[in-house]
Length: 318
Image 1 (cartoon, rainbow, N blue to C red):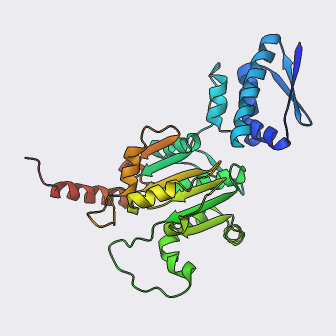
Image 2 (image 1 turned 120 degrees about the vertical axis):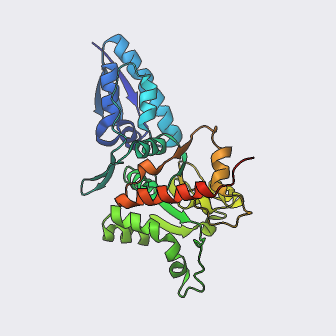
Image 3 (image 1 turned 180 degrees about the vertical axis):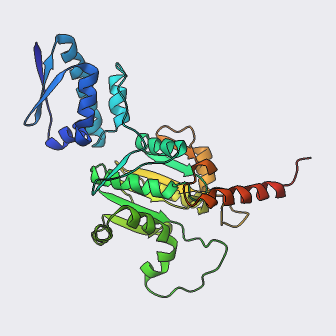
């Protein structure tokens, strides 16, 4: 029996290394076969020489990732293990909110792919029809990131573009004026968390809800940023928003590129970004379809009927 020791600068690194409920530690133990004992800020590895050598290699690699980013993703742990054994990955359909043991489960293969993309990439652009869970799942993943201390703050943003009708003058302060535009994000938040918890997060600025225009000039570090209705941004607005991303932050952009409320001569920022960034590392592009709609059973049929009508109006190619 051999033994080796690895030291860490602080306990937060060890907590990140172990993962929620020690799931990352279990992956390493199962894959390498090494026993791991925690002593203060040190890990003591026990096993045969091959197990110790492999264990040191994996833990040192994971420690470098933590020192660079401050956190670990499960995909990074499995990558470090190089799949030496068939380690079952945690079901992507489960998003733990740590709110009275509540969990959110994507209900379609497309939604599961969406959740995986968020877990594995720093920037995700998701396009899909109404009712496909784009915003809801993004907010759930943001809450999970906040409560597992991957980020310190959540920012929810939305362009203030009217959907085909003019609202005119809106009374009240800035918060009251932008509330109608940001209501869908607040609805998702209130559905996932207790009302009093949402209120406390908003009061303490742990969760910030703001129109897209308020993003200019900011740098958001350690923040989970969601841009809803991204199809209604211009190319310039999208570039401005994407460059707000700071250290250890994550961005999810949602929208339906078939429902753009911009003037016909204006290029949509989300469509443009999905094309420009499709081959950039750490960027995930997800396209949900009518099969992923999980609202009332009629919504899927409604979307299909309108899509069929739109196709019928398209001019035929000569």
